[in-house]
Length: 471
Ligand SMILES: Cc1cc2nc3c(=O)[nH]c(=O)nc-3n(C[C@H](O)[C@H](O)[C@H](O)COP(=O)(O)O)c2cc1C
Ligand SMILES: [Mn+2]
Image 1 (cartoon, helix red, strand yellow):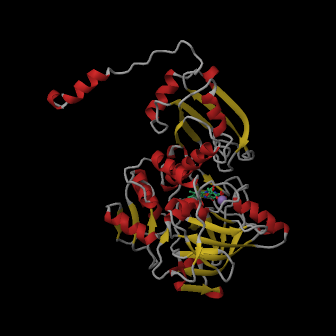
Image 2: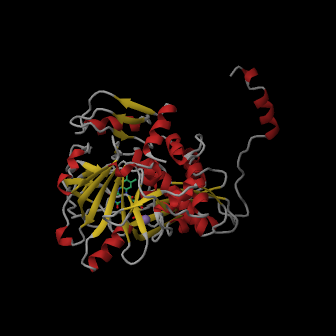
Image 3: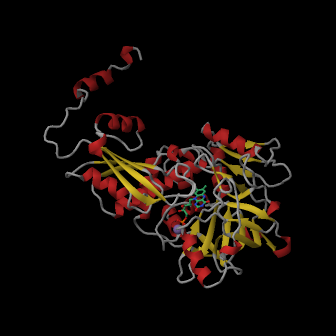
């Protein structure tokens, strides 16, 4: 139910390493985490961070097993299996949070003048980063001023001074919808940034669920029990009772007061912000800091794939894409996968059991129209039912032997893009093109190629004698 449970279980299962020597928050910590994540190593708990008493937790989700532990799913589950179960759980009933009077996050309440963001061991990740990033494993809680909709969204946060952070709320994100409404009302936007705590809340914060849906309810559905929240007397927002650290305050909505932040070494493998693409961002004025006794500071690596960030994106975007396709009631979907190696977002693969002519292209065009697929996705590959979407070797085989570029390709010229895509010119990152590659044998072909299948009887015999052969 909280970060401490998760760390404890990881440790019991040999999925955690404690780093006991002193490590510098300035580049050293992030470089250790990055190398460890590329090696698909364990989660890390840095116990002695230079200048601080507070430990730093990284690399939570670099293995499917740790994702399964966080989700309370069978530990042998693949990313595809987890995403499917996620889809099944969240297309049933969502479970809203319950309010509780108090919780461990209120153990320390630091108001006004004493609040200092430099009291927390926020790392500097990459050499050209513009500063220290306090919000990487973070989500921002905001409320729609015109309804009861509460949103949890992961938007990175750089420390700008003792009481101010940048918040990279990209256009079209849910907090951006809300921000624009507060802007019209000439008000700041009450907000709470949660750093560390229930691992599922962080996973949900970076999930593309539809507007109007509260991510607390998604976590309730995933876990089967409601989240416990405390109503803040400062912002009125529902705060997770077991969070490690919360920064409460208001987000500036007046664009003339937005500030430059970054650069930051992003999940694309390139820097963003102040590296040619000046782009003033909203800021959070921190009015109050809440934290548990002996808080654990949670950070997540970014940079080139594959890191924690890519695994998170891969899992939750696969899950929401699958959910969207399920909700569209497209028949025959066998499996869905957005590989972490593609940034966990830029390419998607879907396996389909074709039932009518054009079915595979129905799937391809559906993908790019979903909430997940319409945003930043550049390529969709559709394969036949005999290939699992996460079996990359067979997907490449299908592209080799079932795909004809002219017949099997559709290019869509204008789709919503992400301003972080380095493949687009810095001054034109609003729109991207997309490709749909239909790597299926056309359903309507009367004369289909004859695929090699092993002889069942012989297979059984060979399996029976396998040891005898000396293997
Ligand atoms: C580690 C991590 C960092 C992210 N950083 C940002 C960010 O800085 N800005 C942003 O707009 N989205 C960022 N995202 C993606 C959003 O979290 C994602 O689009 C999510 O759907 C946003 O919530 P919303 O749909 O409620 O707006 C990040 C995702 C992850 C996993
Ligand atoms: Mn949302």
